[in-house]
Image (cartoon, rainbow, N blue to C red; front, side, top):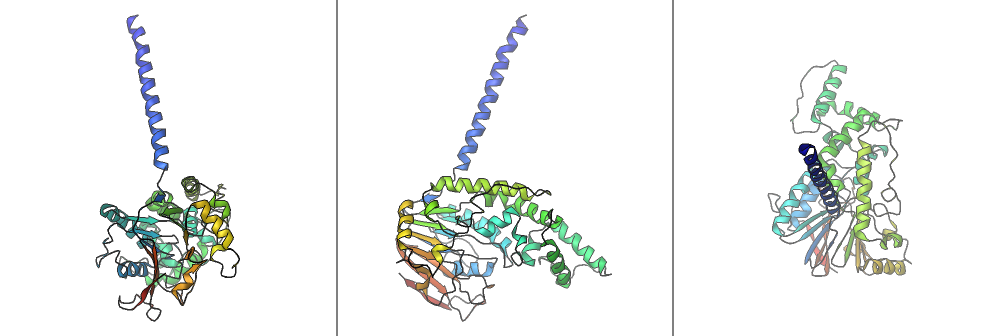
Length: 385
């Protein structure tokens, strides 16, 4: 009888313990979602626009602006580096950029600095598994680089078998694919890119491998940040979104991206509600602030910045092929457009960086005469604004 009686207190204790652990887990989860998106008192900021897979251009920009040394290690101290989105697509080395940024983030933190990687529309499309729906977005090199190594080897064996060849891969093992099989790979990518009722198996391999290795890192990034009195966002914020709390806006986008990532790994097409990520006037897509034809817009810009308690907004997304640094700013330096075609996929583009030091704006531009990873001396003098 006593033993039966003593069971109940133990059950209660166990229940209380489990309940406490559950509450702790919920609170920990909620705390984890509160990712910081506002910083003050930052003396130096360097912002770099769309990279579209051009690893070499990115490294060059960082070296010439004294962010990294010759061995590609952080030397910028307490500087905040902002990469404003669109690492993926069009170019060839998105994976190399991601790998490098993951390392650089840690080095910057140790030095008291910060690396901010913002979500652009091309990150969204790759997370959601829909980048293939837009012909030409996913380059062959990017496609193969994010496939599992075993899958690439299996496909190349099939290509050789179909061609009646059994020779092993001849090229360096670090290359994305055997160059002797480029024609076969291009035909395969063309097949993968066709829209169908269900995703091509290779799309699933691409999404699963990409998200397994980079999904958590990417889906925990911000879409909008504020440093001092400056907003950084890939597409831009219109008046509607400027009224949103930045922390809540970022949390909403992250939740959408996580849901989209989960769906992208499924062989069945699932409709996921992502009203902000898909909104053509949302932070990832908005273009009106960069429209050179829209000159009667300053009053709205003033309202947007007032809502955000900011003085400036830095955007990318809209390629602006410039001949002079002054073409990167609009509305008396309130809006800065930093997508100048850093990637060499833009033949007339130019490497650039926006530098803000103690509230002063500077533009650094690469020399258009030397597009193939120019030596450091081939640069236009940094111009103050």
